[in-house]
Image 1: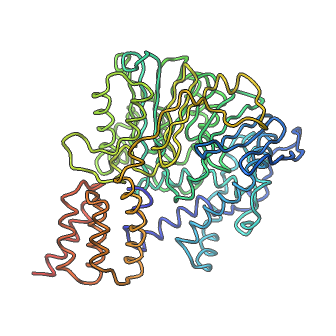
Image 2: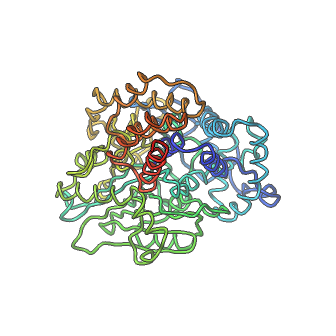
Length: 567
């Protein structure tokens, strides 16, 4: 299940484990070697760029600019050498950077409120990132250094700004390592040849990385023109220079999907840094593979690479001790990916088998297969409908809204669609991937200079895909209300305070097909030893489509205990 539901439905002890590994990602302060490390800044222009504030939603600095479009997304354009890009990004994103850091570190305080425990946690984790700086290319350390000059000093007690910014680039990897605890799940696909409406490559993906509602509020669509390599775009957030979804001006795309990972004990190359390197320096699948082979990673990840030059897509499947490449037969013309590996290299991998058998990965893969069977020719509109689909597999139990078995889990940071040959990309506006899919044409964006003072957007409005009507429906409003009530439900579970039957009935009525609403009410009554009241809720939960096999077993175990108590 995703982080939101997991943290709300498991024991305090388990939540503490989650807190530890979340803190690894954002609160390690390094050992003496990393603390002494300094990035290379000699030979670069280190002058601090001036920023002109045109309005609260538009800033310029030389040729660089940051603006908020009418869909409420930030568009960033930066260019230059690594230090210039870092400094310009930091200067333009200044207040956003500080806000995003607060979001991350507030999450730690929420999960581990005790100051003494936070201090102990930092001491325990001081060694974790001690080797990270050895696995990040020099130019990206320089860029991160430039950006870090604009981060808050409120968190210097955790680590100096540069090291703290460097370590935050491992947060995504730690989140995906938590796949062992069923915290994340992304879906992606590609079609070309006979499976594509125009015969050219098209790709789509949902990035279901959830770190709280505030995390996704300041989405950044970045357009970067480095002095070396390919200009590229990526969907990101303030302070993040790595790539989770992106395309360069050669029509090469990257997206990432978590694989089953051990909890890593030492940081190496963050996946987003590896994919950033691929975006910047690769133009073909083979070049992307060569770059990936050079780097040591510390979690398992499938990197979907689409290439206009190759006219197809492939999966590069990386892990700390293995490496595989998966390509479909020429006649297939489609590539689907959820959260398990498909190459021969992982055929006998036990963790990968576990992901297939026990998680929601296989269900979503089968749902993608069904979507492709029902849609023989994929175009951008059809790709959008696939990414937005909340429904179950045909003939299956209803999922409810927010179920991790759905392609659209109603928590995505973003959905994105690529057409590499035409260099077009669509990025979803909030809420989730339901808002308007805003189109960007890299030919237009990188083909000329732009006046940041007068520019309202870098997008091409004539190619936009309309907002999903579901976002204005009564069902969606009930789902959003369910999320509010779900937080109250967690307070009843955590604080063991009194919950009325009326609250429980309303809570369940807002999202009746979602198993967790019945499971949690059952948990509440079980904790209060009200076994007769708890029983029907677990029984109903077991009639729903439960996210994972372990979660289903937990519900069954509760019911067995209740029956023993009542008999």
